[in-house]
Image 1 (spheres, each protein chain N blue to C red):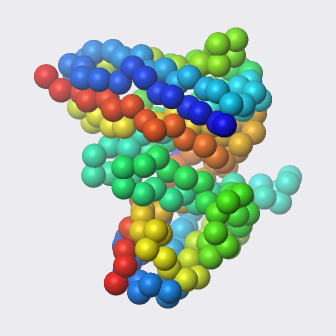
Image 2: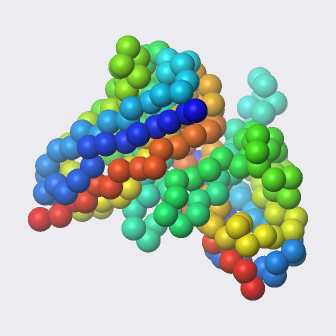
Length: 113
Length: 121
């Protein structure tokens, strides 16, 4: 199984400041045939279902604010919120869909400082 | 509008069985792979199972393999998860989720509200 790790476990950032979450996979999730990283980022607010923010490591989903961005390739990825807003308080997960089981990272809780 | 409506959750005794269902609407159901993902109290998201759009391919998490069966009825736009030999650690909110493509190896782009499963005597 591919093990996904995230850092930090939690972070508190002032409104308008940058937040960066890191995600690492135990093996590469880059598929050579299509040159895509099989990695997604999800946001889950309290009491709500998860929401896909970023697909294929760096493609922002429709309707997702452009302050959210994803980067990385192979085994190392990051999600950046360029200017944290109050509505961004949530737990953020990365997930690989490169090989089954499609494992999630443990999550990073983002709060306002 | 894409909608996924889960049902079938509830309280079940250890060793018991439960069948979860997910009614899909607002999209061409057989064009998309479908998944189940769970969130246990105080824990993170855990992927459970996925089925391809045609239903031909199915995959399971090791923690539940042998105890669960995922299936779909494309004529009724319904996804199901049969769960047997349930344990206390299976207690969680179970989400039905749509993949972005018909093949299983694609991101999950839409989630239902979830149904709560509690395994307790």
